[in-house]
Image 1 (cartoon, rainbow, N blue to C red):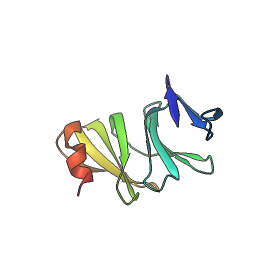
Image 2 (image 1 turned 90 degrees about the vertical axis):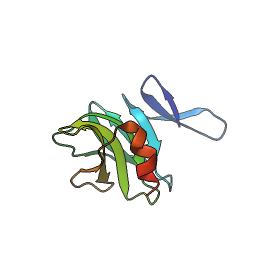
Image 3 (image 1 turned 45 degrees about the vertical axis):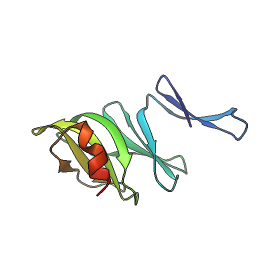
Length: 116
């Protein structure tokens, strides 16, 4: 993948642009099995499947979503967001569901949370 000004491109083996994957994407990250891509676009957490399907994950009452990161088993997406706790680390199942607070510390706690 190549990102340039919020546009994600898929490259072939020679480095030639194959397709545009997503426009307006911020903070892209790949799943451990390399079949999904999580990113933030238009203040919404999104997951792009290898089939090309892009799903929006519901994050009601959360703003300022940033830095999504898959858990090591690919079952969760952790991300930084603002809520009543201030800026906290939250997580949501990759298949959708309700987000939950994973840590009350800010973005610097993300590495520690992912090591659990």
